[in-house]
Length: 523
Image 1 (cartoon, one colour):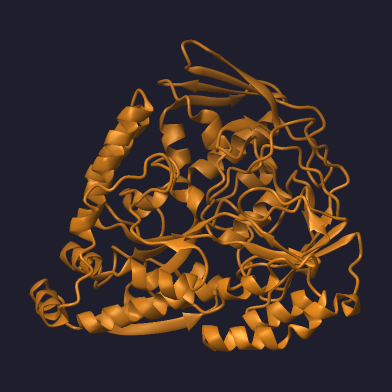
Image 2 (image 1 turned 90 degrees about the vertical axis):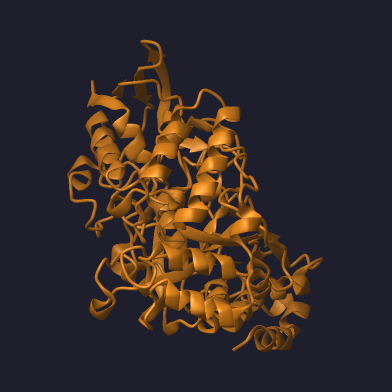
């Protein structure tokens, strides 16, 4: 079903909009939510998918939380002290923290959790490389003894990007982080109801009666007190946009994470519905550097020269708010270094096909993983596949739900054994703020994110960025990182779009960024 057909089906249902009194009233104690994709993996330190991150913030808690300007504030910690010229950090847990199994949160749980997270996360790896020793000096205190100053320590432990540094019981944290956990025991504001979990259909949570919110903190991405107003939250997986639209209109569902942009204008000015501000998203193309054809840097650069950001974002964003002409970063590090030379938007495909052959392409399959339950990913994939075919690639367009794609992309196998070549996906813009958060722009090989690019130069520049004395120096290094990225092509940014949600009008208390379920209440 294309965008216009979906819009027609939505407009056909607008009779419900005119008769909200007929919609089934929702319970004050129950919130029903439609996530943008299936929750296939539960462990927030094992997978970077958006549903896994949202789930992680419900079940677990973090030591710090970031405000609306991405500055860290204490969350699980009462505070910290810094000594020895910035090389000794003592973190003290606040009172009242306990896990869902009734056990108190102890310093040794924190140490084990940080160690588990740092084995998977690029930010965590950099933090631990700067750490000489991490110890629990008591049940309440954890100490970092650093090799060198690392002022970004609270920001690292409160990051809101993928692979969240959540705190879990020591017995779970001591497990292999490459093997996702199935037992969900956190200290967050919600308990996961594992017996009701049905992948592809339902995930359910109940309010954790033993959770003690911190007393204060600014609103933001996890820095405020986490106060829960619903006894139960249900996630209902509804891949078809027209069905999701009808369920919101009828009152069967309360909140839809990712409605199609073309649907939103019909709700503007209607008090029975609310357009919910959320994180903007960056659409990008991730290339697998381990398998053909993108294990060839000349071929990667040729693809970069043909990508049309404007065309992709038109398909993805439609009537919504979006922009093309995007480099590696969305925050303070955003720059234009090398952009015009890299993105030539070539249309001379006869010449491109000759250059592709000269670069060594011999007609090998290009296996594209395509998530069909996310309209944006599908739209970008369709445009991208058309570009690839015009370039002369043998495109194997493999469709699946995004949960399956999230699992499939972990494979390092060759194409004939279940491997893959590329995929298009969206990531919240806070992943791309700077080199600390943008793990897609790393060159750390098999220790990095899916696609596993290897670039000694990117890693050298990343180290220099972290060691830079001030933001001006960081900006200069970020420009060099972007120039190097156009040579190595770890990924290809396609553009940024606003990504508002849609909710019933009687809900309020939505926090900044991706959906969070504390603070939201029915009025």
